[in-house]
Length: 439
Length: 186
Image (cartoon, rainbow over the protein chains, first blue to last red):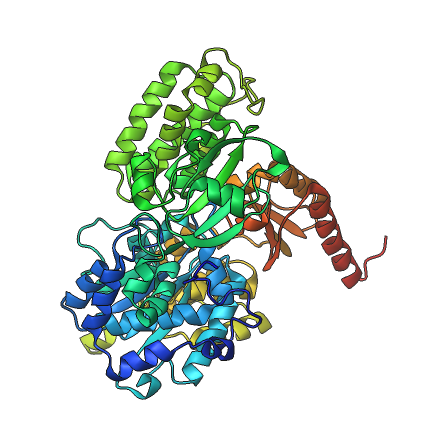
């Protein structure tokens, strides 16, 4: 039996209701804390648990909480990033739809720990079911004095406001999310200053992902030591891995952090569809690039993946079988980033367009190896010079696929052949610059 | 008139431009919902969502009205309205299809599904809406439903594990439902 932290209530009938949540012990931790807990103790426990941000960046959560708690400001905010948009990721949606009270409790504990009385949930505009469930859950919580003034008979106040995003991937970046919450275009801010000191409305703001906050109640309840021993190979806790692509059983699996990709793909996912062979996989969302099948035994944790030249990111494992063309995948990925770039900084805005143009040329048999070298240099500059995470990772899927699957790129550019027979390899009109800018 | 009284006027009022909501039931419902949100500093996106839900798109006079009522420059309302892909400045069809073409959907045959959707909904190659005004198609990045790939959403409803045949039948069903509703006979 694998211990679950985030998905502990998933699958129970009516798990989204307050009644079911309280039956499984929900809100007891919060009640105890607000009545006689100490906020510094909570932060200490979270730090000790080694919890890291589950949205993609993996920043130590306890440290972030401490920064916000220590920041000077009369009004502090907790913002929950529920703008889950990383291709291949759907773990947060499941929590929002099936266990919204877990998130609410996590946010309230975070608010208590950092001294914030107002929380915002910024949910993806497309998540209509999750939005309805969350609205119901918030109404229930307010009606039962779990949220509002003097919550659960204590002197603590905590309010949560629900806000919808409107279809912009870049708003998953924390400063863009804050801009969007303020009613503006989702354009990332320059950092520093960080949101921990200058966030929403210029006040200290804690921005955490849904999965991160949903871990908090259980960690506080069962203790950091219990949480730490759940992981493997020195890493702490569990992680929700989202498995999709060419697998028999796609889905979100909560497993000890550090399981290998092969355990996830073959044991949980039932192997590759149609009994074909594995060619490559993306270990942490589109942005983490691709790894070849020879690395299927890599541990899916922060350190091992960083050593392998990738990252754990959001934990979305996308599986590609041997019929996949890596140039085609790189082109589709590049199109995604070109579409989602906010257009504020030049390396990202122009870099992504150039990437789409050049890869389109190559997929149509019009590119040369030299084009790829120029694109590589451009990609390295995008990583270095872009303002936010979007631009900094946008080139990475291409760069990693070029280094791991150079043979395929050679076939496309030198023999003008697509080994998988996916790319058109026939000259068509390459999209013109101006066509690509129109959204 | 004191200086203070002058400062309270928005620019639109000072210039004598007043925006009024279009007449009709839609506007009444819309205004009631929006009035509840007045006075909060962070609600512009939420308001635009309500506009989109009430009118099906963002009509220009309503954007002007929001700027006026919330006392924010019209430019800022327009910036937000154009930045986010969920909002549309043109009237949308009765059924808005959002089909995903991201990696997980693509790997599971998303391209064939997309073609089937286009064909079934009569979406022209160079446009996004069918001529009969029933369907408009947006090819969108990941919808966060990759476990159900390939997926599409039609208005608020989601359809997963699609095949070209399934996508075709979903759309045909919607069309016949709509034709029956209008009492349309061939």
